Length: 496
Ligand code: CO
Image (cartoon, rainbow, N blue to C red):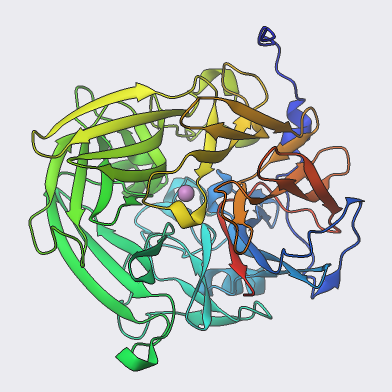
C-alpha cells in the first residue's frame, strides 16, 4: 500500500532562501571530519562543483542567482580521508568588480548595473561568469559558461590559469557549452563530446569531439580535438544541454522567441527576453557523430513535444529507434524584472517532469510518454552507460510526490520497472545535483555511490552526503565548514 501524497509543502521558504549568500572565504585543502558513517575506501578521486558564489556586491543583489560569479568547490578523497578547497574563478569581470567594490556589468538573467535604465541601455557586454559547469580536459580543469570560452584552472590548487581557447579550437568570444557529454568509449576510446551554438534567424551548431586520454601510438594528446562539424538550422536556438548515442548527437530546439529589444534598451537581461512561441513547434535535431554509421550525412529533424527542456537524462538507440529521456517544463521559467528570486512562489511555476520520447528514424515520427509525475531536475545514469540503454537513473526531486517545490530529496528510478527509492533531506535540507560515481571494477550498473552537496538550513552551511547508489542508504555525511549557495553542475574525477 502506498501512502497518500502529503499536500502541504515540507519546507520553510526561509531555510531554502538562506542559501543565497556570498561566500566570504577560500579554503585550501582543509581536512574534513566525518560527522556520520564512514568513507568508502574505494572512493578515490575529486568531486568538483561549480555554481554562483557571489550574489551581492556593494549592497546590490543579483536579479537571478544564475548571474552570480562562478566558484569551484572541490572535495578530494584519498586513503579514506577527505579535504575541502574552494576558489572563485578569476574572471575579468570578477577581478574588476572586486577591485571596484561595486557591480560593473549587467547579467544575462536580468541583473542590472546601478543607475537604472540609462546606465544599462546599450551596454551589451557579456560578463563571462564561469559559473555553470566544471570538467577535466587534458591538464586543465575547465570552468564552463555556455555563452563564451571556458576558463582553465589548475585541477589541484584551483588557481585560474585564464580564459582558454583550447589550443586554438575556439576564437575569442566563441560559445562553448557548459554541458559536455563524456562518451565512455562508444568507438573505442573515451571522448568529451560538446558543442557551441550561434543563434539567430538561422542557428549554427558546432559539434566537437575531444580525446579524453592521450594515445601516444596515434600521436594524440589528452584534450586534443578529434573531430568537428557545423550544421545550420532554421530558427532561434536556446540549447543548454544535449544527449549523445554512438551514432547521434541529439539537440532539442525549444519553441521559443527571442526579442532582444528590452535587453538593448536596458530594461531586461538577455535571458529575460526569451518567451514561449505560441503554436510553435519544438524540434529534435539529430546530428550524425564522427565514427558512427551515419558520419558525414545531413542532420535529421523530427518534431518534438510541447514544453521547455533544459536537461536530458540520457539517450540510446534501439534498432531504427532513438530513445531520449528529458525533463520537461510546461513553459519557460523566467523571473520578471519586478520579481525577487528569493520570494519566488513555487506553486506558480511549472515543475520539471521526466518524459521519454521514442523517435522513429526511418519514418521521422515521434511518440512521447511521461515516466513519473514527481517534480525532478539534475538526472543522470551510470557514466559508463551514457548513450547506451541504462536501467537506473538518479535525480534530485521535490519532497512531495506531486507539485512544484524546491529539490529536497534524491531519487533512484528503475527505468524498467518504474520502482523508485528515495533519500530525503527534508524538512530543512535542500539538495543539489546528485552525482553517481561507479565503484571501480563493478559489474552491477548501480554499484557505487551518489555524492550530493546538501544545503543544511538548520546549520546554514553545506553538508556533503554520500549514499550507497543501490539503496540510497547513508554511507557518510560530512558537515562542511563552508556555506555553498545552491549550485549548478559538477563532475567526479577518479584517481584511478
Ligand atoms: Co545545466
